[in-house]
Length: 376
Image (cartoon, rainbow, N blue to C red; front, top):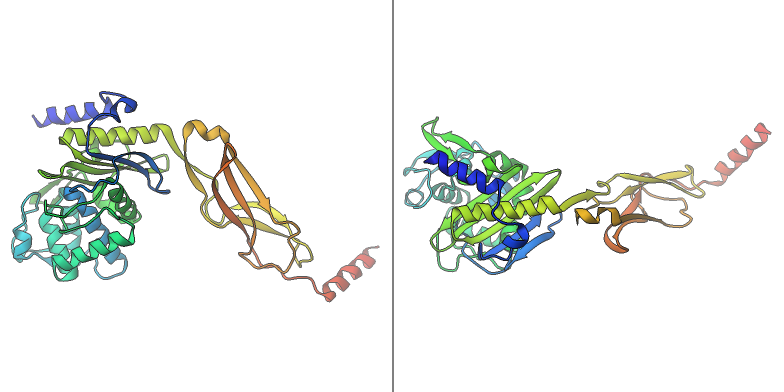
């Protein structure tokens, strides 16, 4: 029976029942959104700001706070965490923590990311902040910092609760932030693993990890109040996409909708990079300097997400300041690079000097004249 279910899921992901143009107007979910991660550009949306219960997709924020605490050195993956009675009492998806059971943060995080463990989420929250309530305060504070205006968290695991809600847009925002912490992919891409020395089996609730090319996360969720939800992330050809589905009627619909969104993004869009920060663009002459030129470097990364069919209509324009004169300092702005589509600016960056050049003094001119006389 399990093999039949797996084969059915593969069929759905490989051969969707309808084209995206047909599917995107159907009532497949309450809310849908597709975002390109590097730019935050929205590639598709349907009811993106309705506040809805997110179920265990909530744990994206839980994992984000864990990652940020790890980077600040407040905890380590070897930190030992003791499960409380409250953690043990959690229902839904769990790793069956017992009261006073001790487990490393590494294993707790594995339980959260792979098995959507509600008990592990509570145990980590209590360890980090002393109580779930204090941890939830940090979740809401971080949400406000990220501009998540449709969100209010009541718990750290996503079990149905009054006034616990977010939106597809806000889920994409916190998913994008979590993806900046590359270490999380070590956990969100696990398909099968174990805890307790191999005695407890883990299987990823996100079936796309096994069946969708390039999938690297991020979190599923389902409760009676939320329906079936997912923030599905995948990367291909240097483009990272985030597909959010909220309120799908079934798990099959959730995965099919996320796959269709990702397929649409990868089929129709691409990231065009016109230079990473510090890329050399051209050589620029400098007047009255001890050196005669500098290199113009891009001040910031210059990439843009475009529809693939628009690529041939993109133009790059280099506008340099006239009569650049010494003295000039490293990092001084000496022009700009503008990228246009059909004449409209789609991205731009300043061009800066790669070095410092001092102005020639009277002694420099004397030496120059003397060299000229000697060579005559």
